Length: 382
Image (cartoon, rainbow, N blue to C red):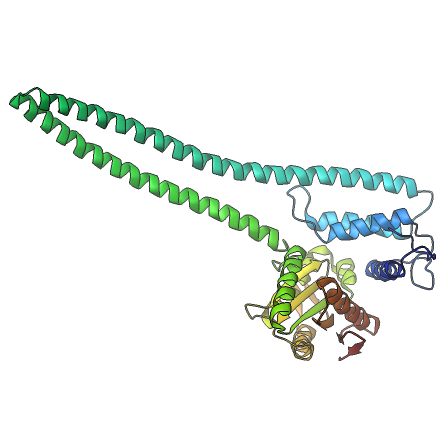
């Protein structure tokens, strides 16, 4: 990754991206730094910028591990980020060593959790296959008994003895009726067990898939799901040219909520924010996702940016009026929004970047506002 300082050999586009990203990160943590004119710590070197970018990306894609709750892991990584943004040079080496130790142990726990989940799923499949195998062996054994009784019946036919034939015939008929009754009962039990096992396996697969798609805290879609859905809407747009708009939004001054009331209240505010977003964007095709921290996105197919702005203003008004109650605390909060409508010759990254720039414009101009972006400029609406 290039350094923050510009040189003739560096890509101007990458440099602009890094400056924009670092500025946003510094403002997110609200730390006091010795900033340059670009609002970026002037002594931020290439190594620390790389680690910061890695932490920021990893933080947005965490999933719940039994021994490492997402919230706690994110708090620890955020603390490392704050120190890396404005480090004490004496502690620099020690800080990197501590981060390396933490990240290594976290990755071990993450791998162990994934491996255990995989082993649990393998056991379900193995038990299912084992049961089927036992049923097939039982069926084969019964077929051998039938074959033996048929052989005895053939021998009675060939013996030319009426009494022997009557006896063997009665024995075979009684045996066959009993065999079929037991076989039908066994088949019924087997099918019931198979259906039960299939239902269990299906539920495990659905739960695993849903868990991978949803944000653990708010039960909105997660960043991975958002990226997949954005690509789908891009493909549909390329075919049909049906408009689709993207809302990027942040909870204003969310860090102050955590600092004032604690992270339990902060988590509750996040969940309440998602609840109100889902109430406002409730069409089956509307897509509400949490991208990380207090940052959310909403995909609105069949909406031009102007129509999306009307819906966005509605949800902003709803949130402004809402009083979130958690125990003795009454919290009010607002959101800032950036809107972009997908354009021709645009990919998902460019589409998201315009929405993010519009969001940044809203936040830079006082927050509690929405801004619409087009290919050339942003225009503040509220």
